[in-house]
Amino acid sequence: METLKKMPSLKEVFKNDFEIGAAVNPVTLKTSEGLLTKHFSSLTSENHMKPEALQPKENGFTFSQADELVAFAKKHNMKVRGHNLVWHNQTPDWFFKDQKGVPVSRDQLLDRLKTHITTVVSRYKKDIYCWDVVNEAIADEGPELLRRSKWLEYVGDDFIEKAFEFAHDADPNALLFYNDYNETHPVKREKIYKLVKSLLDKGVPIHGVGLQGHWNLESPSLDEIREAIERYASLGLSLHITELDVSCFTWEDKRTELERPTPEMMEAQTKKYEQLFQLFKEYAGAITSVTFWGVADDYTWLNDFPVKGRKNWPFLFDANHQPKEAFWKVIDINSNKFSNE
Ligand code: GLA
Image (cartoon, rainbow, N blue to C red; front, side, top):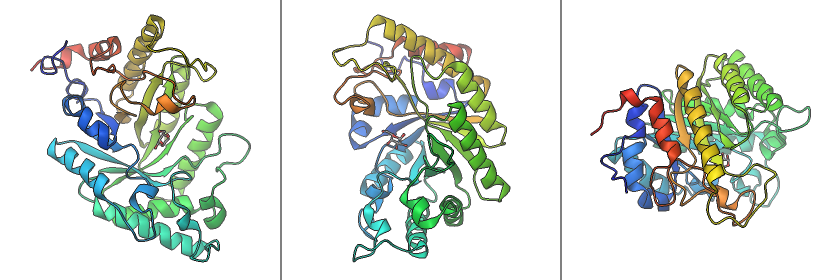
């Protein structure tokens, strides 16, 4: 078994390139403490900073789990990426109704949005250096730019710029991001570009684009990822890879019987991770953070998505928290730069 001490540290190896982040929850914060403190310089809350977690009832803010994450990060000198302030999912229904169940007006909803964002962003002013302000607002398909949601329906398309303005007013130093998935798909990529460009043209305080990076062994291709990075980088904003995982299954592959990954899967994953980090490094002038949507293969949301209960192994560390071949290939990209403590 590799001892943690002898192993090179991801965050050290890439310290001149970008932050290395992980999404965590109250369980993995404990079960993965060793890996987190050794390899990661940034944390994201998997669920506990979303609207339903922070304000389950109107004005009934619940900060304890988010506070724990922030305290862990502080203790270990890590940064925190806030995720997220406005989303069509995991947002309680009370936002959109009054006490009698009648849909709220635009002004009421904007008031509620402002209260939520101001309270949350102000509380973590010194602790959270950047926020995913708006998550997944773009329509995947069809001619529409924006996805149908209650935010769009009740407020109108300026809910996005309002959210950025409220966040900026609450913490003028925070870096504010628009974050989305299928971000490399050419049609959606152009929609995201169009939205962000229009925000910039209007002078909205937006500082970055988050590429979620929920990818798999085959798709998207390296060329598609490169094109997306170049396109967003041409806006002059920072790019963060915000939710990286490399699933062992393509979207069409619905097999459920595998108890462990096949050697072919691990070989393909090693290659993909090596190519990805070479690419990220090439664009390190624009990419300032790479966050995995988890830590090690003992826990991933992909165990339940898109096939419930199916195992998946998407990270650089295996289920026993040992480095996979992919880890060593990624380290090798910067091999002359790590200090072997
Ligand atoms: C999206 C969200 C994340 C998370 C993942 C799935 O990408 O941005 O917060 O919910 O889905 O776990």
